[in-house]
Length: 244
Length: 249
Image 1 (cartoon, rainbow over the protein chains, first blue to last red):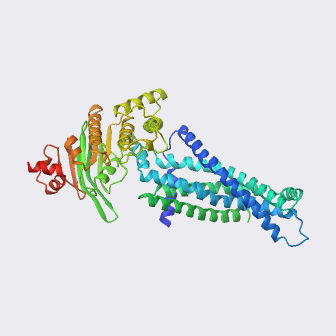
Image 2 (image 1 turned 30 degrees about the vertical axis):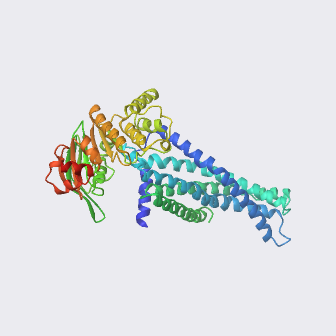
Image 3 (image 1 turned 180 degrees about the vertical axis):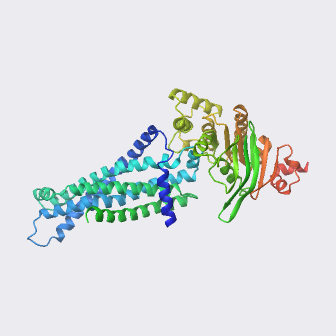
């Protein structure tokens, strides 16, 4: 395992050596951003909407005391969404969708000798193929997290008001009451770290895939598993560092 | 000219190449032949620098590839064109983008010049009006031709071909062989072809290096390959039914 971690850091180091022209990366980053960002919006919005709806219903079900005002429900939904659901749970989904795709793409390029073709041309294949993916991920994932947050709060509003769990006024009041804007900054810091981890770990796994289609599949699975573990560990460390 | 001196390579505890030396001449196809699993592809990968040998030197017109600094390596790599076994075309790019790729990344050539060069290379390999096709839309033989066009688009000094005929019918194989030979002579390239196809050997084998179990056992030309005193080479050459029937005559 230590060897693997060492290889990962050497891999990250290669991202920044012998780079190509800026113009080359600019185009690649745009292409990756469209693929990562636009391609994930629907799934992220859908998952977040239902996450917010379920959180509202379940929080309300746990509020058994009549002394707790109704707007506390949306306060809880807001804090859970901003602090954990939007950045972390969406990161798990992001690892499953984008991470496995990155790993599969690079793994296929490896076994079909496309990466060797780049190396023979004198191109740093790690920098050329992986750096745009990481940059695009760091640019797009925080935006997905913002979309996820908005959709989750919207989902909570729809579920809460349709089922008459909470009035629209109370829901909006709860969302705005005792708002700590640092939590948004915290969520965005987390999202940048998670975006880097998912993109770099998935690319690492795909880049070093060897064998055939079966091994590429294994590499994709490992990419998702390792990314999720890294995200959860980083989640705890960041919470301890920034909120502890 | 490319010189290989005392190349050895071991994977784990399994020796793949044992002290292989040889010289590859300019302007004609140099063949590395041998049965599957004898180490010829590993030797080619050592020569182009995709695999670092445990011991030995590779000299490109006197420039030591592995001992040179990073700039020398990049300089040599940018003089290399390579045709891979499966073509190794980039799936996400069409034929024109694939062939143009080395020019886009490695040169500052104006766009119209790039297009002219791409069309020239595609025409040279016998492909026209396929610029917009994706790799998945063309046949195996066409992929190999596009691979050759991409390999020569940057005017390389050295051309490497790893099993250029694998998966192709005999007629297309002959076309590809002739193309490699013509291009080597026309552009005065040092070309190395790895193959186990006896048709290629007898067709374009101006200079042949025979590898057996990681060792170079024989070096010569197609004219004297059938008269060698090396038993392993005889077994390899005459394992082909056509060659065997010729031997009888």
